[in-house]
Length: 88
Image 1 (cartoon, rainbow, N blue to C red):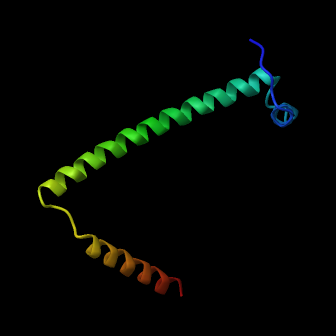
Image 2 (image 1 turned 180 degrees about the horizontal axis):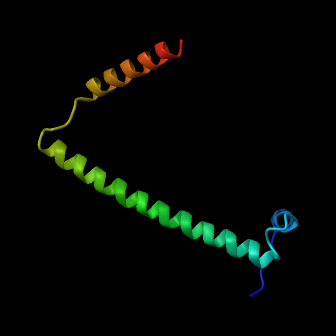
């Protein structure tokens, strides 16, 4: 496979090679792709966890277990006020 890289991308790769951590451009690109794969997997996990939490919250709201938005905002404002007081 042959790819064309922008000059700034080429410079980034060269900079990483210059650190001595990477032997060549292939090493840099493989590391970058591995990090991307790890990030994507983490994002998918976060997305699934968020989806589950939203489903639980929706079920709670359906059962009337929710807290009024004004109450939540008031609680958050009070916590913020207390945090500011604690800082001095």
